[in-house]
Length: 309
Ligand SMILES: Cc1cc2nc3c(=O)[nH]c(=O)nc-3n(C[C@H](O)[C@H](O)[C@H](O)COP(=O)(O)OP(=O)(O)OC[C@H]3O[C@@H](n4cnc5c(N)ncnc54)[C@H](O)[C@@H]3O)c2cc1C
Figure 1 (cartoon, rainbow, N blue to C red):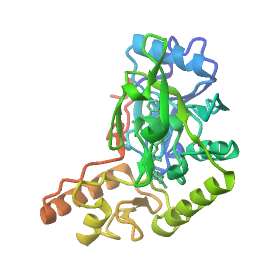
Figure 2: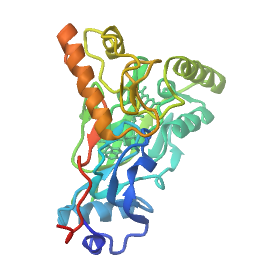
Figure 3: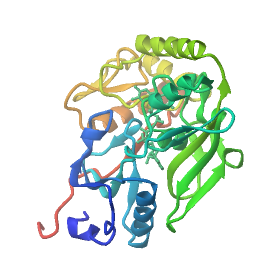
Figure 4: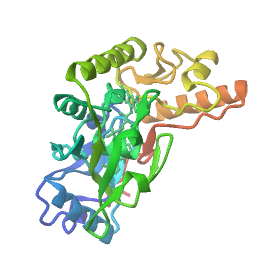
């Protein structure tokens, strides 16, 4: 593991917040995860650029999280984990465009767009992550996805610079986009004018549907598996008789089989064992290999401090 002294150079001049040995269960929607060696909250885009450059130069691993599509393993994450919660500005641009910093939450962005009488994000109603995470995941539902409204992405690159890429030049796939190396710091969205009432009614309908079909009151990280071409992942899991199935406090939600919920004290190891069982059972029954939508990060085992043998 990296210890406090290892970050002295990287964090010189850093103006944001820093917490060492920070438990990540506190910042993930699953409420699971071991500690980050350093959890940082940059003050602004410049802070992100400096940190990305210094971490790359020192070869210290750095990852960014919003925490809502993520399983952090029980041993935690080595190096720097960055939260962009202070980068949450949103502005109306010429025409029907909105620019958002990457740490803005998707529900806040939707609310801002509606306040500007701009439609095109209603499909995202109920997606809780950040704008940066939504870009990286090409987040979406059966009603739309990020690529439908993304105009351009801005990234902090390992050389300390900023690059802007037009969405038209990026290659998107289901819950995936090929981006240059770096950290997404902002996005520009092309929306369409519409009445606020129309936008809010549509968003409310989608939210209502989610409330009826998804286990929103329990810690979860959204859909566990991507939907394969043949059928919805949830249907395949349900047909395999796995609704309600448990490993420790990790459970296949009885409400929606493509959601795994934390009943209280689930560990990442429990979640991974349950995922493995689901994949094996569904494959045995149908021949379909379910692919993870969740991103899994970190180490299996707790970090060992230097000098502790
Ligand atoms: C109740 C619930 C419902 C959900 N419904 C949906 C849904 O309908 N559709 C859907 O697509 N998702 C859904 N999700 C999952 C999740 O909200 C989305 O995938 C979201 O876009 C992830 O954003 P995040 O900021 O939490 O990213 P994280 O989950 O933290 O990260 C995802 C990946 O992106 C990387 N990343 C994050 N931010 C940045 C950045 N700024 N720069 C570079 N890399 C970055 C991370 O390192 C990681 O690899 C749901 C989740 C929950 C809890």
